[in-house]
Image (cartoon, rainbow over all chains, first blue to last red; front, side, top):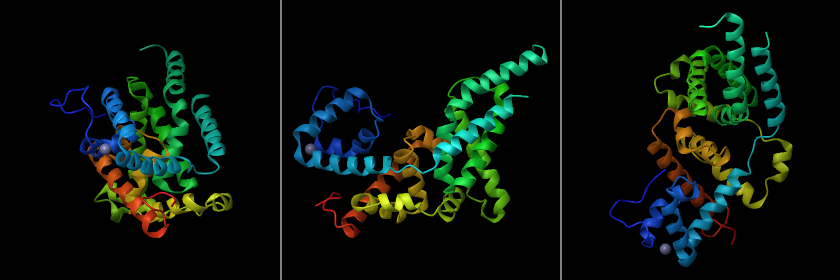
Length: 88
Length: 186
Ligand SMILES: [Zn+2]
């Protein structure tokens, strides 16, 4: 979780430079919410930064869809293993 | 200290409260760091066993962080047993082992991997193991920076810089090999 530098007021608009520096934190929701709101405002108004954000968001959501197969069976077996640990 | 029977019930309750809800996350993280379904399951079993033995001393705060640290130690132990010569840098060792023990893509994954998804896949494969693991933990398994830092035993700053470099590389890869303009479908 990162905060906006003390010398920048929380309500002033974010600059392109600032947005570039914190974009990854923004995408990962690892940001002070007030500051994130300023970044959102900037992304909506600035075409270049908006495109940059979209590019990385696309990559991130595509990665998020990659889940290993057969997870359910393994998790069920592990839960069973957990029960065997505590049931005697 | 209560009588043994009460203790046993308390231990079981603590295990059910703190460990059982995290099993799925633990398994996913284990998949990311072992790259192998069988090893991942063994690693989680090992972690659960260690957690069960230690649960009496656990204070109940941040169970996931506690479990990830246990898993990290369990993994280091497994690697040490398997390849004692690689133990100088545990972090590098985990990465190296992760990149060696790779699952073959399932037939179903091969069918689904088309276009953009396939390009992402090959970009991910082209990453050095160190970067790839961080991307798997944060983007695929949705761990926080802190949780990823706990399992890899590095500062969160390292997680952030690896992530940033990994994503820049993925984007470049998409542009150079996938024919994607600005990292996105043209
Ligand atoms: Zn801008």
